[in-house]
Image (tube, rainbow, N blue to C red):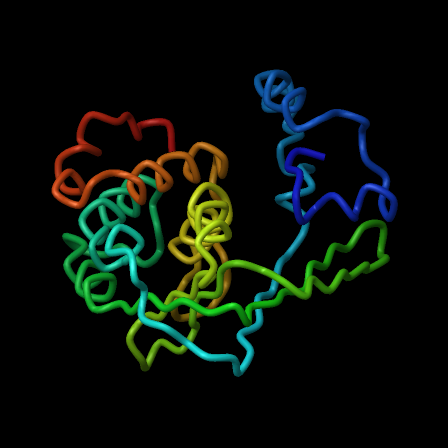
Length: 211
């Protein structure tokens, strides 16, 4: 059990080691040495988000507008070897720069996991991120409308969902493996949190060579 939150209900449904998320973090080097990181529950569980028909609102806080983070996210995409990054990254920058960020309180999701041939699913009435998958339209990102839920989203689900989107091949719609998901999430979180005028240069000081 390497991540709390939405994965917590699986504790009683599947076999897990009785480690907390903090203990898993401390044991990280040992688990990586034993090639066990692929068994993290967060790596095995698949979340499918659903967008309802509730009202939509243009994002009110400009700091949450993903298009303003395009430079930083493209730089991250290069160093995590995103299948969406090609050439000099200009096409990805254009896609992110033309993206739309919306607020809504009508996002749900289904968490599913398959172990030993058995599939288990959990429906979550409330979720906090939905990223559109229609490549023929501008990229659309949906986050909660309620302010406190936005704060939780920016600290957790949004960076993870952005990494998952960056690592999804737009042609095959399959997610490519990444060596260290948690490290990538942390870097994207930094890009999403930094001030807009720092998005181009701030990430130059970060180390990406381990991806």
